Length: 192
Ligand SMILES: C[S@@+](CC[C@H](N)C(=O)[O-])C[C@H]1O[C@@H](n2cnc3c(N)ncnc32)[C@H](O)[C@@H]1O
Image (cartoon, rainbow, N blue to C red; front, side, top):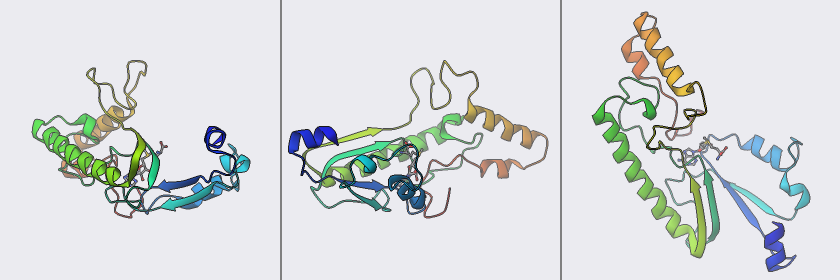
């Protein structure tokens, strides 16, 4: 905010639009922004004239008018797929897939979804606008969220192993285990 005002003048109008699914906890967001939840302090305290809005439109649709966005930022959100391409036979999360066909179905869905996301963002961005997206992924050393060389226990693997144990002990069926997942898909208005 400070550097934008320094560059464009103290009267420069800044508009921030938060974007998430309709099921997002919007009340907590606005409580935080408006200081009802006091800490950590919201930037609106220092910059009360910043205009703040919210959009509950999925990023798989166009969220902003054509050529309207100067700067877009998404952190750890746009790897969520638009649909589950198939059940995972033996795991709670795509990182745990053991069946090659399933991995390929997820890969194809992710490629198709990525294109949809970029086409919408390209329409929204002004010429010269900027977009920064950080997504979760797996690197060549099979490191992914919660499973890196400096972390002793992988949460996702641990939960998958617990699910397998429940099947082995006959506490849940294989089918029930395959219907469980860690949500990385659009939730269609349901709470996650
Ligand atoms: C892992 S959280 C990251 C939240 C936040 N960006 C952060 O870094 O703390 C993923 C977010 O993406 C949102 N999300 C998932 N699919 C979405 C979609 N199709 N459209 C908009 N938001 C979506 C989820 O509701 C969730 O709030």
